Amino acid sequence: MRLFPVWQVAHEGAYDALLDVLLATRQLQLTDLQLGPEALHRPELLLDLERGAERIERAIRRGETIVVYGDYDVDGVTSTALIIDFLERAGANCHYLLPHRHTDGYGLKPPGVQRALALGASLIVTVDNGISAFEALELAKQEGVDVIVIDHHRQNADLPPAHSIINPNRRDCDYPFKGLAGVGVTFKVVQLLSEAFLAADERRRYLNDLLDLVVLGTVADVVPLLDENRILVKYGLRAAERTKRPGLRELRSVARCDRTALDTQAIAFYLGPRLNVAGRLEKPDLALELLRTTDAEDARKRATYLHELNQRRQKLEKEGMREAIGLVTDEDLERDRLLCTLGESWDLGVIGLLASKLAEAHWRPAIAVTDVRRDGLYVGSARSIPGYDINDGIVACREHLVTYGGHAAAAGFSLEADRYEAFRAELIDHANQHITPEQLQAHLEIDVELAQVDIDMSTVEQLRDLEPFGQGNRTPVFCSRGLEIVALTRVGKEGEHLKLSLKVNGRPRTAMWFRQGERGRELGIGQRVDVAFELAEDTFNGTGIVQMLLKDLDAGVVVNEPEPKEAGVVAA
Image 1 (spheres, helix red, strand yellow):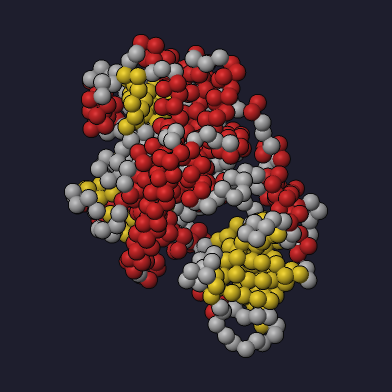
Image 2 (spheres, rainbow, N blue to C red; image 1 turned 45 degrees about the vertical axis):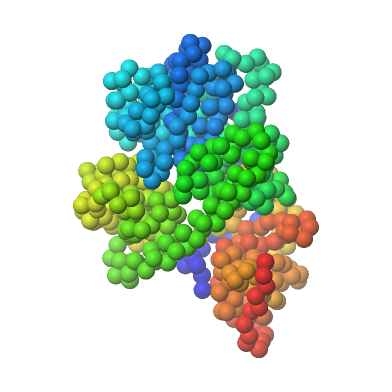
């Protein structure tokens, strides 16, 4: 019955101090997590930043037209919002352009340069893209327009021709932390630039207020929440709580995550998807305009529209996933260690989500490709599993591709339709050579076998010392064995979730297993189960009640044979 055949438990048996065990299993010290502003690295350590900042300052003071070219995801949108906010405050003559996922694709391309030229640009600043924009930057150079690249993506080839390339992940940059999101790098640029335009006290307040944008992009882009990202996120959450941006306040309201303090989970699962959906299904300007509006009623309308758009996205994702699952055969799973599927009608905005779902369902790297534009150019999105760098695999097959780029865990590309089958075969061959059978066994990383006495609110309080959680410092996952089911109910509009009551240390504890309502048919009252779970505070009917959020369950023997019956369904 396990979702994950392998439970990798880092610490089993007795322990003295739970926090010490958690830190040890992650190879961290408490000092690694409890960082203050003094631990932020100086912006000047970023190669080309001083040169780029000087060029932007000169453009502002001379009244040159600056065009910012961003990206369509949350990181790109918040990067654009942040630098435009500063440029306007500094009195710059500036505009922004965001690419349309369906017609422009990722990153700055020659048509984007032409659009900037039409606006009168003498300086183009890319944010969250540009490291691979060779054709576009060549055109800008020919037109006598300087380009400053502000990016964080990996350098896969030589550097394109630009006035400045500010990216901690360029090969010749010695910046001490490589994990900044695009909005983090953009913040560093503004941090240095602001010295030339704002007095000390005003500058400090202003930069702190910008952190509400930084935290959105950083968490949504799933970069490691270590080193200075922890500082940016910690103080960014505080800035988001007190934000003056009506759009962000209204977004929290429609997403129903405004009743408790904002945390990384709320951004990752509630705010991020509603900002991302603008670029997935329509245009990213919708998200940018929400973050930039100063009118409360306008913000309410925009937030509501994005919420409704996200509901449409969920429907498209569900329909696409049904088709994608049907395209994967038993023969594919037996033969291939990477899945590459083509759905000609899949919306470009959901193929990344489909790839992620396929990778999760079959525990192997997965790629979803679509021909929805019907222009002979296929577009693909890839997601991987631990131990296989999907970006390396795609780069190895680059001779078939028109565009490509990404990270170890996620990447994207485009290619001519007639190159698809050759690309697919070559990439699968690469994966078959670099992925072992052991890596294809779905595994769940569990920190500690938790003593039943510690399944308590006091543990939830202790865990707050390790927050914020995210990539590189994930929410702790525990396991406990032989817990007796004393009640079970299916909940949600369609009974899609399972609510259990488990006997823990002689007391009933609520355990929620989301999207696993059907599993209720396989369980019974009195049955003993091993469970893997996170701990959280249940705030639905008040505060101070611990709740187990199940990640997996292994059913054992029935202690008291109950009358077999269907678990009830309760509407949420």
